[in-house]
Length: 136
Image 1 (cartoon, helix red, strand yellow):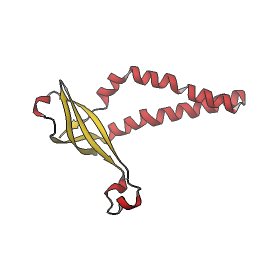
Image 2 (image 1 turned 120 degrees about the vertical axis):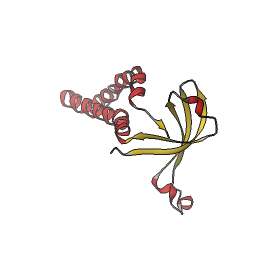
Image 3 (image 1 turned 180 degrees about the vertical axis):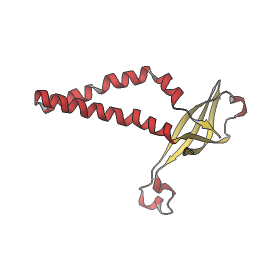
Image 4 (image 1 turned 180 degrees about the horizontal axis):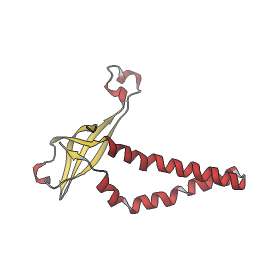
């Protein structure tokens, strides 16, 4: 059985084939009773686009539960953080070994992220189909 990640939210808007849901993302300590006093709690509002075929059954202001699987979350983390980190460090080490110049290797490491994010942007529709959310 796959693990599910779920957040409750409110339907912000409904368009053809897409439901925009506003969720409140909270840190682990936000649920603590004293979180308001220690200022460590962190909450953020996020808008999640959920693509589905039965958008007529949802209305603005309706409470829904947005969910996805753990494997989808891991893939999103890999694309957003893992691959860029490996590219940055890999180019940094290679250029540092070749040139011995730390400044140049740092600039080349950062410059290596530009093509990655361009490719990520160009493949956004394909990635959107792979990283899906569901309404419960």
